[in-house]
Length: 481
View (cartoon, one colour):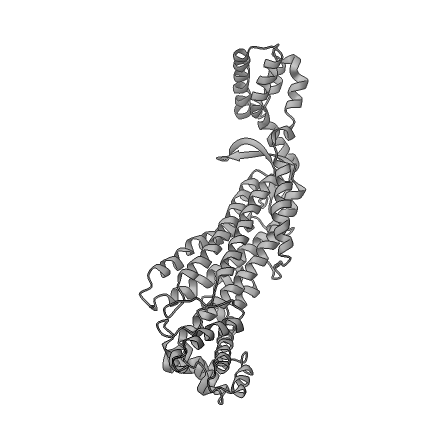
Protein backbone atom coordinates (compact mmCIF):
# COMPACT_ATOMS: atom_id res chain seq x y z
CA UNK A 1 0.00 0.00 0.00
CA UNK A 2 1.29 3.44 -0.91
CA UNK A 3 1.98 5.88 1.90
CA UNK A 4 -0.86 8.16 0.82
CA UNK A 5 -3.25 5.21 0.86
CA UNK A 6 -2.66 4.76 4.60
CA UNK A 7 -4.86 7.78 5.14
CA UNK A 8 -7.77 5.77 3.76
CA UNK A 9 -7.70 3.01 6.39
CA UNK A 10 -7.73 2.86 10.18
CA UNK A 11 -4.38 3.31 11.88
CA UNK A 12 -3.91 2.83 15.58
CA UNK A 13 -3.40 6.06 17.52
CA UNK A 14 -0.89 4.15 19.62
CA UNK A 15 1.35 3.87 16.57
CA UNK A 16 0.73 7.36 15.27
CA UNK A 17 0.55 9.49 18.41
CA UNK A 18 1.07 7.83 21.76
CA UNK A 19 3.55 4.97 22.11
CA UNK A 20 7.32 5.17 21.69
CA UNK A 21 9.17 3.42 18.90
CA UNK A 22 10.85 1.17 21.48
CA UNK A 23 7.54 -0.13 22.82
CA UNK A 24 6.05 -0.45 19.34
CA UNK A 25 9.00 -2.59 18.29
CA UNK A 26 8.37 -4.96 21.20
CA UNK A 27 4.81 -5.57 20.01
CA UNK A 28 5.70 -5.69 16.32
CA UNK A 29 5.25 -8.70 14.06
CA UNK A 30 8.99 -8.99 13.67
CA UNK A 31 9.62 -9.18 17.42
CA UNK A 32 6.98 -11.90 17.66
CA UNK A 33 8.03 -14.02 14.71
CA UNK A 34 11.76 -13.72 15.28
CA UNK A 35 11.13 -14.80 18.89
CA UNK A 36 9.19 -17.78 17.59
CA UNK A 37 12.30 -18.76 15.67
CA UNK A 38 14.52 -18.32 18.71
CA UNK A 39 12.17 -20.58 20.63
CA UNK A 40 12.34 -23.22 17.90
CA UNK A 41 16.12 -23.06 18.11
CA UNK A 42 15.99 -23.35 21.92
CA UNK A 43 13.68 -26.35 21.62
CA UNK A 44 15.92 -28.08 19.08
CA UNK A 45 19.05 -27.36 21.13
CA UNK A 46 17.44 -28.72 24.30
CA UNK A 47 16.14 -31.79 22.52
CA UNK A 48 19.59 -32.43 21.05
CA UNK A 49 21.22 -32.04 24.47
CA UNK A 50 18.75 -34.59 25.82
CA UNK A 51 19.64 -37.15 23.20
CA UNK A 52 17.30 -36.68 20.24
CA UNK A 53 18.71 -37.12 16.75
CA UNK A 54 19.19 -33.46 15.89
CA UNK A 55 22.47 -32.27 14.45
CA UNK A 56 24.41 -29.13 15.22
CA UNK A 57 24.33 -28.35 11.51
CA UNK A 58 20.54 -28.26 11.59
CA UNK A 59 20.63 -25.90 14.56
CA UNK A 60 23.17 -23.62 12.88
CA UNK A 61 21.00 -23.51 9.77
CA UNK A 62 18.07 -22.35 11.90
CA UNK A 63 20.20 -19.76 13.69
CA UNK A 64 21.21 -18.29 10.35
CA UNK A 65 17.60 -17.30 9.67
CA UNK A 66 16.37 -15.90 12.97
CA UNK A 67 15.78 -12.39 11.68
CA UNK A 68 15.26 -12.67 7.92
CA UNK A 69 11.67 -13.84 8.24
CA UNK A 70 10.18 -14.62 4.83
CA UNK A 71 6.86 -12.95 5.54
CA UNK A 72 5.36 -13.32 2.08
CA UNK A 73 5.84 -17.08 2.13
CA UNK A 74 4.19 -17.29 5.56
CA UNK A 75 1.35 -15.03 4.44
CA UNK A 76 0.55 -17.11 1.39
CA UNK A 77 0.79 -20.34 3.34
CA UNK A 78 -1.58 -19.05 6.02
CA UNK A 79 -4.19 -18.33 3.34
CA UNK A 80 -4.12 -22.05 2.57
CA UNK A 81 -3.87 -23.64 5.99
CA UNK A 82 -5.61 -20.96 8.11
CA UNK A 83 -3.07 -21.45 10.88
CA UNK A 84 -0.45 -18.82 11.63
CA UNK A 85 1.99 -21.05 13.52
CA UNK A 86 1.99 -23.78 10.89
CA UNK A 87 2.39 -21.14 8.20
CA UNK A 88 5.55 -19.89 9.91
CA UNK A 89 6.83 -23.42 10.53
CA UNK A 90 6.47 -23.91 6.76
CA UNK A 91 8.16 -20.61 5.93
CA UNK A 92 11.04 -21.30 8.32
CA UNK A 93 11.39 -24.77 6.79
CA UNK A 94 11.66 -23.24 3.34
CA UNK A 95 14.73 -21.34 4.49
CA UNK A 96 16.11 -24.26 6.50
CA UNK A 97 15.54 -27.37 4.37
CA UNK A 98 17.97 -29.50 6.37
CA UNK A 99 16.41 -28.53 9.69
CA UNK A 100 12.81 -28.68 8.47
CA UNK A 101 12.11 -32.17 9.88
CA UNK A 102 12.96 -31.07 13.45
CA UNK A 103 11.43 -27.58 13.54
CA UNK A 104 8.65 -27.47 16.17
CA UNK A 105 9.33 -31.13 17.05
CA UNK A 106 6.82 -32.31 19.69
CA UNK A 107 5.46 -28.80 20.26
CA UNK A 108 2.04 -27.18 19.98
CA UNK A 109 1.20 -23.68 18.77
CA UNK A 110 1.20 -22.39 22.34
CA UNK A 111 4.86 -23.34 22.68
CA UNK A 112 5.78 -20.40 20.49
CA UNK A 113 2.70 -18.27 21.09
CA UNK A 114 2.55 -18.26 24.88
CA UNK A 115 6.28 -18.33 25.50
CA UNK A 116 6.72 -15.39 23.13
CA UNK A 117 3.95 -13.44 24.83
CA UNK A 118 5.63 -13.95 28.20
CA UNK A 119 9.04 -12.93 26.84
CA UNK A 120 7.64 -9.76 25.28
CA UNK A 121 5.65 -8.82 28.39
CA UNK A 122 8.78 -9.19 30.51
CA UNK A 123 10.78 -6.99 28.14
CA UNK A 124 7.98 -4.42 28.09
CA UNK A 125 7.74 -4.35 31.89
CA UNK A 126 11.48 -3.68 32.10
CA UNK A 127 11.12 -0.84 29.60
CA UNK A 128 8.31 0.68 31.66
CA UNK A 129 10.31 0.28 34.86
CA UNK A 130 13.06 2.39 33.32
CA UNK A 131 10.53 5.08 32.47
CA UNK A 132 9.05 4.97 35.96
CA UNK A 133 12.52 5.55 37.38
CA UNK A 134 13.01 8.51 35.05
CA UNK A 135 9.81 10.13 36.33
CA UNK A 136 10.79 9.38 39.92
CA UNK A 137 14.14 11.11 39.43
CA UNK A 138 12.47 14.26 38.09
CA UNK A 139 9.85 14.39 40.84
CA UNK A 140 12.48 13.74 43.51
CA UNK A 141 14.45 16.74 42.26
CA UNK A 142 11.27 18.82 42.30
CA UNK A 143 10.34 17.68 45.81
CA UNK A 144 13.79 18.50 47.11
CA UNK A 145 13.77 21.97 45.54
CA UNK A 146 10.37 22.88 47.02
CA UNK A 147 10.61 20.86 50.23
CA UNK A 148 9.89 23.86 52.44
CA UNK A 149 7.72 26.11 50.27
CA UNK A 150 4.44 26.45 52.20
CA UNK A 151 1.28 25.99 50.21
CA UNK A 152 -2.36 25.70 51.08
CA UNK A 153 -3.46 22.13 51.59
CA UNK A 154 -6.83 20.94 50.37
CA UNK A 155 -9.22 18.26 51.56
CA UNK A 156 -12.39 17.85 49.50
CA UNK A 157 -10.77 20.63 47.41
CA UNK A 158 -11.60 22.94 50.29
CA UNK A 159 -8.86 24.93 52.05
CA UNK A 160 -7.21 22.87 54.79
CA UNK A 161 -4.07 22.86 56.88
CA UNK A 162 -1.01 24.02 54.92
CA UNK A 163 1.57 21.63 53.57
CA UNK A 164 4.55 22.27 51.29
CA UNK A 165 4.88 21.98 47.54
CA UNK A 166 7.61 19.41 48.00
CA UNK A 167 5.56 17.34 50.44
CA UNK A 168 2.70 17.21 47.95
CA UNK A 169 5.15 15.91 45.35
CA UNK A 170 6.13 13.06 47.66
CA UNK A 171 2.55 11.82 47.48
CA UNK A 172 2.95 11.47 43.71
CA UNK A 173 6.35 9.89 44.23
CA UNK A 174 5.10 7.34 46.72
CA UNK A 175 2.52 6.02 44.27
CA UNK A 176 5.26 5.55 41.66
CA UNK A 177 7.46 3.76 44.20
CA UNK A 178 4.59 1.35 44.78
CA UNK A 179 4.40 0.82 41.02
CA UNK A 180 8.11 0.01 40.73
CA UNK A 181 7.73 -2.48 43.58
CA UNK A 182 4.75 -4.07 41.84
CA UNK A 183 6.65 -4.29 38.54
CA UNK A 184 9.60 -5.91 40.31
CA UNK A 185 7.38 -8.39 42.10
CA UNK A 186 5.48 -9.48 39.00
CA UNK A 187 8.67 -9.63 36.92
CA UNK A 188 10.19 -11.86 39.59
CA UNK A 189 7.30 -14.31 39.36
CA UNK A 190 6.94 -14.55 35.57
CA UNK A 191 7.88 -17.91 34.10
CA UNK A 192 7.65 -19.46 30.67
CA UNK A 193 4.98 -21.93 29.67
CA UNK A 194 7.74 -24.24 28.49
CA UNK A 195 6.92 -27.27 26.37
CA UNK A 196 3.75 -28.70 27.87
CA UNK A 197 1.92 -30.16 24.87
CA UNK A 198 -1.71 -30.07 23.86
CA UNK A 199 -3.31 -30.35 27.30
CA UNK A 200 -0.30 -29.58 29.47
CA UNK A 201 0.67 -33.21 30.15
CA UNK A 202 3.87 -33.28 28.01
CA UNK A 203 2.59 -36.53 26.50
CA UNK A 204 4.25 -35.91 23.12
CA UNK A 205 7.61 -35.24 24.74
CA UNK A 206 7.27 -38.29 26.96
CA UNK A 207 6.95 -40.31 23.74
CA UNK A 208 9.95 -38.56 22.19
CA UNK A 209 12.09 -39.35 25.21
CA UNK A 210 10.89 -42.95 25.54
CA UNK A 211 9.01 -42.40 28.79
CA UNK A 212 11.95 -40.64 30.48
CA UNK A 213 10.14 -38.26 32.86
CA UNK A 214 13.31 -36.59 34.02
CA UNK A 215 14.19 -35.58 30.47
CA UNK A 216 10.75 -34.01 30.09
CA UNK A 217 11.37 -31.99 33.24
CA UNK A 218 14.85 -31.07 32.09
CA UNK A 219 13.54 -29.96 28.69
CA UNK A 220 11.47 -27.20 30.27
CA UNK A 221 14.36 -25.98 32.38
CA UNK A 222 16.78 -25.93 29.44
CA UNK A 223 14.34 -23.93 27.30
CA UNK A 224 13.81 -21.44 30.11
CA UNK A 225 17.55 -20.98 30.64
CA UNK A 226 18.18 -20.49 26.94
CA UNK A 227 15.46 -17.81 26.80
CA UNK A 228 16.72 -16.01 29.91
CA UNK A 229 14.02 -17.12 32.37
CA UNK A 230 14.49 -18.81 35.73
CA UNK A 231 12.08 -21.58 34.89
CA UNK A 232 8.68 -22.64 33.60
CA UNK A 233 5.35 -22.90 35.35
CA UNK A 234 5.15 -26.39 36.85
CA UNK A 235 1.61 -27.05 35.63
CA UNK A 236 -0.56 -25.68 32.86
CA UNK A 237 -3.23 -26.58 30.41
CA UNK A 238 -2.35 -26.01 26.78
CA UNK A 239 -1.70 -22.36 27.68
CA UNK A 240 -0.19 -20.69 30.68
CA UNK A 241 -2.88 -19.53 33.08
CA UNK A 242 -4.48 -16.38 31.74
CA UNK A 243 -4.35 -15.01 35.26
CA UNK A 244 -0.80 -14.04 34.35
CA UNK A 245 -2.08 -11.57 31.78
CA UNK A 246 -4.50 -10.21 34.37
CA UNK A 247 -1.69 -9.83 36.92
CA UNK A 248 0.51 -7.97 34.45
CA UNK A 249 -2.23 -5.66 33.20
CA UNK A 250 -3.27 -4.94 36.79
CA UNK A 251 0.25 -3.60 37.36
CA UNK A 252 -0.18 -1.42 34.27
CA UNK A 253 -3.51 -0.24 35.63
CA UNK A 254 -1.74 0.70 38.86
CA UNK A 255 0.74 2.85 36.94
CA UNK A 256 -2.15 4.48 35.10
CA UNK A 257 -3.88 5.21 38.42
CA UNK A 258 -0.74 6.90 39.78
CA UNK A 259 -0.32 8.99 36.66
CA UNK A 260 -3.99 9.97 36.59
CA UNK A 261 -3.86 11.11 40.22
CA UNK A 262 -0.84 13.30 39.37
CA UNK A 263 -2.48 14.69 36.25
CA UNK A 264 -5.70 15.52 38.08
CA UNK A 265 -3.80 17.27 40.86
CA UNK A 266 -1.78 19.25 38.35
CA UNK A 267 -4.87 20.31 36.43
CA UNK A 268 -6.39 21.62 39.65
CA UNK A 269 -3.18 23.43 40.53
CA UNK A 270 -2.95 24.88 37.03
CA UNK A 271 -6.48 26.22 37.43
CA UNK A 272 -5.32 27.85 40.66
CA UNK A 273 -2.29 29.24 38.78
CA UNK A 274 0.04 27.75 41.40
CA UNK A 275 1.84 25.05 39.39
CA UNK A 276 1.74 24.46 35.64
CA UNK A 277 2.85 21.86 33.17
CA UNK A 278 5.34 23.02 30.51
CA UNK A 279 3.94 25.33 27.83
CA UNK A 280 5.99 25.89 24.70
CA UNK A 281 6.50 29.32 23.14
CA UNK A 282 4.62 28.45 19.96
CA UNK A 283 2.01 26.25 21.65
CA UNK A 284 -1.66 27.14 21.11
CA UNK A 285 -3.92 26.60 24.10
CA UNK A 286 -7.23 27.16 22.32
CA UNK A 287 -8.32 27.75 18.74
CA UNK A 288 -10.74 30.45 19.93
CA UNK A 289 -9.32 31.83 23.18
CA UNK A 290 -5.77 32.89 22.41
CA UNK A 291 -4.88 33.63 26.04
CA UNK A 292 -5.51 30.08 27.26
CA UNK A 293 -2.83 27.73 28.59
CA UNK A 294 -4.72 24.46 28.64
CA UNK A 295 -3.09 21.54 30.51
CA UNK A 296 -3.19 19.33 27.44
CA UNK A 297 -0.36 17.03 28.51
CA UNK A 298 -2.02 16.28 31.83
CA UNK A 299 -5.35 15.82 30.08
CA UNK A 300 -3.80 13.25 27.76
CA UNK A 301 -2.35 11.39 30.72
CA UNK A 302 -5.81 11.29 32.30
CA UNK A 303 -7.41 10.19 29.05
CA UNK A 304 -5.01 7.33 28.37
CA UNK A 305 -5.06 6.30 32.02
CA UNK A 306 -8.82 5.94 31.91
CA UNK A 307 -8.45 3.59 28.96
CA UNK A 308 -5.88 1.43 30.74
CA UNK A 309 -7.86 1.25 33.99
CA UNK A 310 -11.03 0.22 32.15
CA UNK A 311 -9.09 -2.18 29.91
CA UNK A 312 -7.82 -4.10 32.96
CA UNK A 313 -11.20 -5.82 33.02
CA UNK A 314 -10.42 -7.56 29.72
CA UNK A 315 -7.67 -9.94 30.93
CA UNK A 316 -9.63 -10.52 34.13
CA UNK A 317 -12.69 -11.60 32.16
CA UNK A 318 -10.55 -13.70 29.84
CA UNK A 319 -8.91 -15.48 32.76
CA UNK A 320 -12.26 -16.19 34.37
CA UNK A 321 -13.87 -17.65 31.25
CA UNK A 322 -11.24 -20.15 30.08
CA UNK A 323 -12.67 -23.65 29.81
CA UNK A 324 -10.82 -26.63 31.24
CA UNK A 325 -7.44 -27.02 29.45
CA UNK A 326 -8.09 -24.11 27.05
CA UNK A 327 -10.46 -22.37 24.66
CA UNK A 328 -9.59 -19.98 21.85
CA UNK A 329 -11.90 -17.16 22.84
CA UNK A 330 -8.91 -15.59 24.57
CA UNK A 331 -6.83 -15.05 21.45
CA UNK A 332 -8.37 -12.07 19.68
CA UNK A 333 -9.01 -10.26 22.94
CA UNK A 334 -5.45 -10.75 24.20
CA UNK A 335 -3.93 -9.46 20.96
CA UNK A 336 -5.61 -6.12 21.63
CA UNK A 337 -5.99 -5.84 25.41
CA UNK A 338 -2.47 -6.74 26.50
CA UNK A 339 -0.52 -4.96 23.77
CA UNK A 340 -2.56 -1.76 23.92
CA UNK A 341 -2.30 -1.62 27.71
CA UNK A 342 1.48 -1.58 27.36
CA UNK A 343 1.42 0.93 24.50
CA UNK A 344 -0.89 3.25 26.44
CA UNK A 345 1.16 3.15 29.65
CA UNK A 346 4.30 3.73 27.60
CA UNK A 347 2.72 6.90 26.22
CA UNK A 348 1.52 7.93 29.67
CA UNK A 349 4.99 7.66 31.18
CA UNK A 350 6.65 9.56 28.34
CA UNK A 351 4.23 12.45 28.89
CA UNK A 352 4.59 12.17 32.67
CA UNK A 353 8.38 12.39 32.33
CA UNK A 354 8.06 15.44 30.10
CA UNK A 355 5.73 17.20 32.51
CA UNK A 356 7.61 16.28 35.69
CA UNK A 357 10.84 17.55 34.19
CA UNK A 358 9.34 20.95 33.34
CA UNK A 359 6.93 21.84 36.14
CA UNK A 360 6.57 25.58 36.65
CA UNK A 361 5.86 26.90 40.16
CA UNK A 362 4.48 30.36 40.98
CA UNK A 363 5.48 31.09 44.62
CA UNK A 364 3.80 34.53 44.71
CA UNK A 365 0.42 33.10 43.73
CA UNK A 366 0.87 30.31 46.27
CA UNK A 367 1.76 32.85 48.98
CA UNK A 368 -1.23 35.07 48.20
CA UNK A 369 -3.69 32.20 48.43
CA UNK A 370 -2.13 30.98 51.65
CA UNK A 371 -2.22 34.49 53.08
CA UNK A 372 -5.90 34.73 52.24
CA UNK A 373 -6.80 31.54 54.13
CA UNK A 374 -4.21 31.37 56.88
CA UNK A 375 -5.93 33.69 59.40
CA UNK A 376 -8.94 31.39 59.49
CA UNK A 377 -6.70 28.41 60.18
CA UNK A 378 -4.85 30.29 62.90
CA UNK A 379 -7.96 31.08 64.98
CA UNK A 380 -7.14 28.38 67.53
CA UNK A 381 -3.61 29.77 67.90
CA UNK A 382 -5.05 33.28 68.27
CA UNK A 383 -7.46 32.05 70.92
CA UNK A 384 -4.64 30.45 72.91
CA UNK A 385 -2.54 33.62 72.76
CA UNK A 386 -5.49 35.61 74.09
CA UNK A 387 -6.08 33.16 76.94
CA UNK A 388 -2.38 33.21 77.87
CA UNK A 389 -2.65 37.04 78.09
CA UNK A 390 -5.38 36.65 80.70
CA UNK A 391 -8.55 36.70 78.61
CA UNK A 392 -11.70 34.64 79.09
CA UNK A 393 -11.78 31.78 76.62
CA UNK A 394 -15.51 31.91 75.93
CA UNK A 395 -15.51 35.66 75.45
CA UNK A 396 -12.44 35.54 73.18
CA UNK A 397 -13.93 32.68 71.20
CA UNK A 398 -17.03 34.78 70.48
CA UNK A 399 -14.90 37.78 69.44
CA UNK A 400 -12.87 35.64 67.04
CA UNK A 401 -15.98 33.92 65.71
CA UNK A 402 -17.77 37.20 65.02
CA UNK A 403 -14.76 38.79 63.33
CA UNK A 404 -13.96 35.63 61.35
CA UNK A 405 -17.50 35.57 59.96
CA UNK A 406 -17.16 39.21 58.94
CA UNK A 407 -13.77 38.58 57.33
CA UNK A 408 -15.22 35.61 55.47
CA UNK A 409 -18.02 37.79 54.15
CA UNK A 410 -15.45 40.33 52.98
CA UNK A 411 -13.59 37.61 51.08
CA UNK A 412 -16.76 36.53 49.31
CA UNK A 413 -18.69 39.77 48.96
CA UNK A 414 -16.23 42.56 49.60
CA UNK A 415 -12.80 43.34 48.23
CA UNK A 416 -11.65 39.70 48.47
CA UNK A 417 -9.13 40.25 51.27
CA UNK A 418 -9.04 38.25 54.46
CA UNK A 419 -8.89 41.13 56.95
CA UNK A 420 -9.38 39.09 60.13
CA UNK A 421 -6.10 40.28 61.65
CA UNK A 422 -6.94 43.89 60.95
CA UNK A 423 -10.31 43.47 62.61
CA UNK A 424 -8.84 41.77 65.68
CA UNK A 425 -6.16 44.45 65.94
CA UNK A 426 -8.97 46.95 66.60
CA UNK A 427 -10.35 44.88 69.48
CA UNK A 428 -9.11 45.82 72.93
CA UNK A 429 -8.53 42.20 73.87
CA UNK A 430 -6.31 41.42 70.88
CA UNK A 431 -4.75 44.79 70.01
CA UNK A 432 -1.84 44.36 72.49
CA UNK A 433 -1.16 40.93 71.00
CA UNK A 434 -0.69 42.13 67.42
CA UNK A 435 3.09 41.37 67.25
CA UNK A 436 2.49 37.85 68.57
CA UNK A 437 -0.43 37.42 66.19
CA UNK A 438 1.70 38.30 63.18
CA UNK A 439 4.38 35.90 64.38
CA UNK A 440 1.75 33.20 64.74
CA UNK A 441 0.73 33.70 61.12
CA UNK A 442 4.08 32.88 59.55
CA UNK A 443 3.20 30.14 57.00
CA UNK A 444 6.13 27.89 57.92
CA UNK A 445 4.67 27.52 61.43
CA UNK A 446 1.67 25.68 59.98
CA UNK A 447 3.34 23.04 57.78
CA UNK A 448 4.23 20.69 60.62
CA UNK A 449 6.97 18.23 59.67
CA UNK A 450 6.36 18.53 55.93
CA UNK A 451 9.95 19.62 55.03
CA UNK A 452 11.44 16.95 57.27
CA UNK A 453 9.09 14.33 55.84
CA UNK A 454 10.33 15.22 52.35
CA UNK A 455 13.96 14.83 53.46
CA UNK A 456 13.27 11.54 55.21
CA UNK A 457 11.23 10.07 52.37
CA UNK A 458 13.83 10.96 49.77
CA UNK A 459 16.71 9.68 51.91
CA UNK A 460 15.07 6.50 53.16
CA UNK A 461 12.91 5.43 50.21
CA UNK A 462 13.60 7.22 46.94
CA UNK A 463 17.37 7.53 46.94
CA UNK A 464 17.97 3.86 47.86
CA UNK A 465 15.54 2.84 45.11
CA UNK A 466 17.34 4.95 42.52
CA UNK A 467 20.75 3.78 43.73
CA UNK A 468 19.65 0.16 43.37
CA UNK A 469 18.24 0.84 39.90
CA UNK A 470 20.65 3.16 38.07
CA UNK A 471 18.91 2.47 34.79
CA UNK A 472 16.41 4.92 33.40
CA UNK A 473 14.75 5.38 30.06
CA UNK A 474 14.23 8.89 28.80
CA UNK A 475 11.85 9.21 25.88
CA UNK A 476 13.83 9.82 22.73
CA UNK A 477 10.85 10.20 20.42
CA UNK A 478 9.28 13.57 19.80
CA UNK A 479 6.42 14.04 22.25
CA UNK A 480 3.30 14.26 20.11
CA UNK A 481 1.19 16.63 22.19
